Length: 319
Image 1 (cartoon, rainbow, N blue to C red):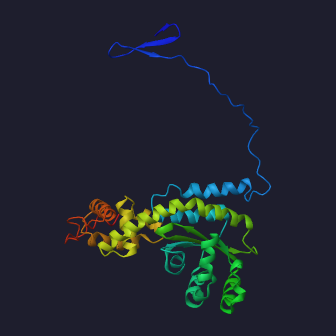
Image 2: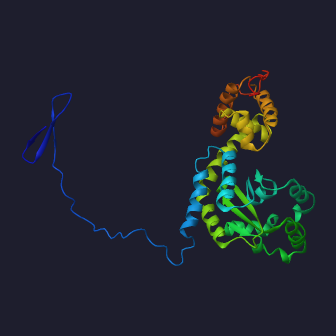
Image 3: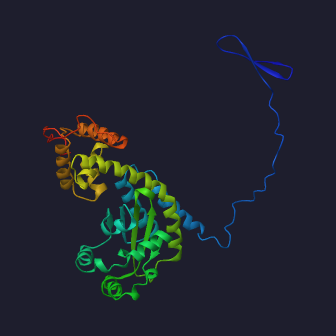
């Protein structure tokens, strides 16, 4: 390196040429810093700092979910952890009404007695299964049982007084995550003991609904392609879920934990999926499943992907 006047020169390493660079210059415009620490929250700020931490805690728990089952499970556990809700359900479908009435999903914290009685006697009277509730969820994204005013309808009032109250449920909250053309998620939680859902919880959940919408749209789109691939092979929804997770490299134990089912159930579904896809091993399943998903996304039918007469390998699906 040598200095020539105000110009620096540097010998190149390969061809012996000399490159010339102008000397550094001071910035022509300097802005004085007025920072005096973090910005204080204005008086009308809906969320105090600790609630922002709850918001980020849930987002951080799900933002790297590789698939829909993982997203559902992590969201459910995050709501239990950060909000303290004892009973949570996460459902999804092509619309908010479809998600509530017949959507796929998971739940935790509900006793078998509660679920059996609900299905046998009360499901038709649940205020959240009404078009009025779906409209409010679409408009507000978060709605509580009290906002639905069940006392105005005798059957809904009986649902609250004769079913929820005896089970210790004082209030209920529902959140909609709008996934656009891909559908919607419904996230519901029961509150026992406390008289109502805190206003701070509602504010956090409304912000959470907005932040999770892009990820929900992406995961539902991916799941839709997987469902189309499953229909091509005549797989049931559960067989499709198991096949997809097995193709991603998960063991039976991991799949069982992800789907909240037993390992024996996973083995049965995986055996049928292997047979229907004409796969003898998990490796073959992964290759064929990936090829079919790619072809489905492009709107073509993969050549040679019709199920064959290959018998599934007993050792592969028993892991």
